[in-house]
Image (tube, rainbow, N blue to C red; front, side, top):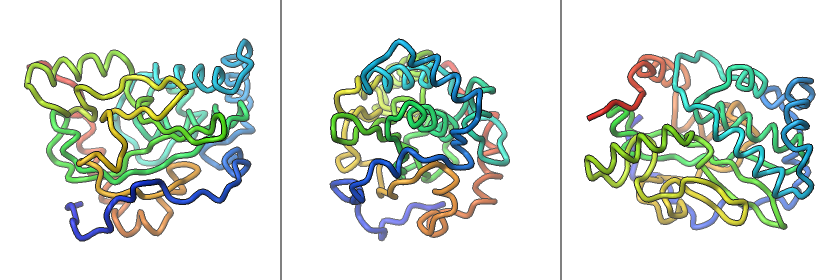
Length: 245
C-alpha cells in the first residue's frame, strides 16, 4: 500500500487506556489460554520466578530466542501453533508472548504501529508500508513497550553486521544502533527512540488483544486489503532472509 502523508500525524502518546488491566488478561481464539500445553509451558518457564518482572523477563527471553522466520502463511497462527512450530514472524511471536504473559497473570497487549517499508530494505524493496506489532507489558503500575522480541540474537547480529558493512542506519527490520533487549525497567525500541520521534513510524494504530482483532478493526480496513496483502507477503516470503554482501 502506498504511503499517505495526509494521514493523521502520530500522537506523542499511545491511545488512552480505559484504566482496567483485567481486560488485558483475557483469552481469545488466537491466545487460547485454556490450551493445556500452553499453560504447562508458561508454568514451567516461570516456576522459579516470584515477582511479575521476573516472570515477564523469562517469558520475553523465551519468545525472543525463537528464530525469526517469514514463511508462507495463509492464516494467523494461534499461540499454541507458534509454540509447536518453534519459530515465527512478528505477529506469531507477539501472539505467543502475549498469551504466555497473560497465563502468568501479567497484563499484556499488542500496539500496532504503521511504519514505512524502508525499514525492511535489505530484505525487500517491494513493501511501501505496513503494521508492526509492539508488545506492551504492565509492570509496576505502568505499561512498558518493546518490539525487541521480534528478532532472535543470531538474526540481529547478522543484520547489524550487514548494516555496518553498508553504512546504513536501518534495514532488515531493525536499526544499527537501536536497543537489542528489553530489561523490564523501561520501553525498549529497535529504533532506539520512541515512536513519536521515529521518522519511519507513520501512525499509531492503537491497542489490540491479538493480530486477528487488528485485522478485523476499522483502521486495518482503512489501511490494508487483507487478501492482496497476504498474497504479496507469501510471494515475498522466500526472499525475506539475510544474505551476505
